[in-house]
Image (tube, helix red, strand yellow):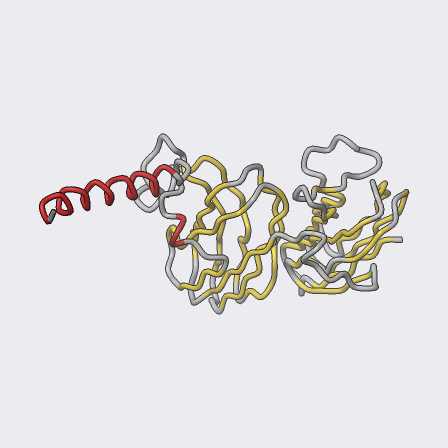
Amino acid sequence: MTGRITRMIPLALLIASFCALAGQPAGRVHAQTCSNTIRDSKQGIVGCVQLHAGLVIAHVKSNGTQTFDVDLRTQDPAGKPLSQDPSAYKTYYQLYSVDGRVDGSAAVMLKTDDTYYLGVNAASGPYEFSFEQPAPLTVSPVNQTAFTGKAQQVTPVFRLPAGPMTVTVQSDSFSLRLWLYQIDDLGGGAVPPAAQPDASKGTLVDVTGGAPSRGSVGVVIPSDGLYLFYVFPGGVGSLAWNVSIQ
């Protein structure tokens, strides 16, 4: 009896190990180490996060005083691990490229469910990232449609009725970009300008050339529901901004 048990234990372990590996998609073998919150101070590939296709909001605080340049990227299955070769990525999404301290948020639309790695190209101090993917059942909308802020920021979620509206935004910055995102159960999406309904990036305002930067654009809200703005001023100035929709 003892001999039979000795032979069965390695077989059971082998089967369990095979099942565990088989349940992990290609390129996700390190998924168990991923977290929605990443804290560090070094450069390179730092941590990872499991994200679904659709809208993702990256909140960040950084105490550095110099350039802070960070992106999200996925592993190229045919390449070396990103930890060995940071250029071996399949997809790439820029989050921040700013100077000095950071306390803000950025929004990007991801194309696929995957393990996303944080690529820190430049940092001069400790930083902290947290990621969220808003959905109708996980957000608490505010009762307002006008907002003020500073630097890169994602506004609180608010409600809009379907139909034509006008978005107005201004900043004392050298350049200014603005997106309006819809939140739904399928990952959400960018609302394009009414004059360019097929715009690939969905950017409502994209102006550059001198301060102050301002824009006003018509949009057609596709359905009654939840929305948010992503405001991205750049260049010189305080980077203060205000945006409204009516």
